[in-house]
Length: 86
Image (cartoon, rainbow, N blue to C red; front, side, top):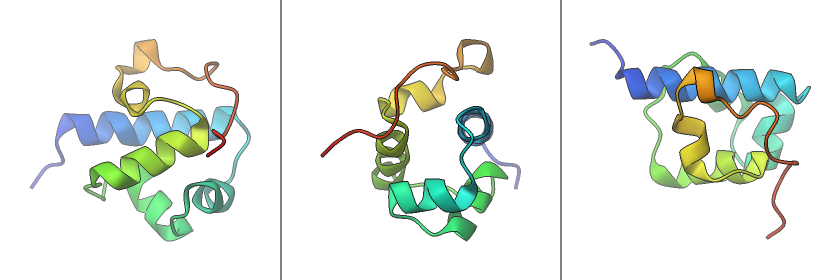
């Protein structure tokens, strides 16, 4: 079964944002409390994330979760200043 386009958009946005901020998958995993192999699966569009994990990744980037679902042309590579403080 082909992944939903929204999942692929999320995957592309996470990868682009991670690279733009100079983060490795390992560092993003640490910031989000997820495993680095899970981050890799997300970036390849293999993982169907739950809302909690979407929130963890958004928090790691210091963004609202909706920002990670925007079309690529509106991607927030320069937005956000980093991880949010809890």
